[in-house]
Image (cartoon, rainbow, N blue to C red):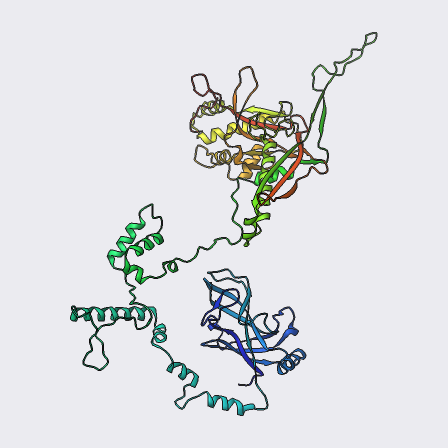
Length: 626
């Protein structure tokens, strides 16, 4: 075999500087393969390919026989190696599999000539996903120097090396020497698990037989064979330890399982540990019980997954609302709908009549600061290294702030008027609670819808969901007769309300609306968005006899709602270090105003759920299944 130089690509059982260890046969699949020889792992240029390397999997690792090509870069690299300027090899591998700190499997893709390693011994420069196969890559250095092959010696040197390395019976001397130096423990470690189990059984049987024949004799006795011993006091594979027993009886197993069922114990691992403390045989057989239970692994590596309430509609509200650089909003409209305000015909000699004055509608809205504050202990910031905990915390704070603003815009923040944290309706006017001049509040009459459908000439019985859906659509379409907003509105409702309408069936059991787009067409809206934050929200009217109204949904085109913020009032983040408590404090805030800017530009569908003095429901809804 002709080659220019050779050297160790990897070495087994050598602890790397990052604590990991490449185990025997980790790259066994590369045995006999030829891979590219590259300069310093630079894969982006074909000129960096210097030749090829033939890999040989050995007991101590993977050995590489390297040959340079005749390119300019190949000849230059050959001179560097011959003069000793470059004397180290490294590999690039992927499809890595790791268990604990042991690298068990991988695939070598190339061997590289590299400058001297940064530290003696081996080290791995990689990011690995522990415990499963993956496509992560690793660059593994061994720190071993390479050996030159002198072309002058030619075939003679190869033959001499082969002759020196081979014994008369055809076996390699180093392999034969390794075989001669093997201890009993080394031989035992070559057994499979099944073979080891058989050995344990034979040893246990031998001990049992010896105990029966020498029950009263506690001293060691010699047999007829010189040097023999009828009793085994030590494990022959561990001359420094006591006799090891790896067998759990049926009674042991039953006791452990029974202990694990106790709620105070908690886990099977705790049960085994507790049983081992009270039973010497088990404790003697399993020295380190924790090794039976590997470390926990994250299903989703990196930062923890964030659980939030429905945010889809929040993004829609924040993106579709009209933005203005003016935070003090003033709206003015002239109401010219008075029927008496009309044009008149003129008659000679008659005095021209003056029409009644039209009404001027005006209101102003001032801004309010909305914020979200949090803090992190600096020790936690330093200790958490697997993800950026500060940016992670800011992301959660921003999601919370957006949700709070969107909720205040649509239905109010839900706090009582005396709450100091309340977002005032005078600064961010909620669409649901807005004045009748801006939001049309419409009750859905389920009883009337049911009476109309059940009292038809067919006398058919319709399902509750169908009645509910028809009542919603009827109320929505009739309310649209007063709607004065821009364009086509969207419908915002709870997920439960949407499902009720989608599940509506006709008399034959067929779905009325096959999809959300079919329902949107029936409601004459652009799109339907669900908001779980609307669930169970009610308001009390300001009538002489107050009524309780339950929110069903809101029709609005968010372009008719204006959010105003002057320069400096946009969403801004701050941080400050508290030296007394060793905390980093974070603040994210904005100063904004918000209000509908067009009259009759939103519709709020509601259900009257007012309770009578006796406690019964005076709502128009009569079917308890709705």
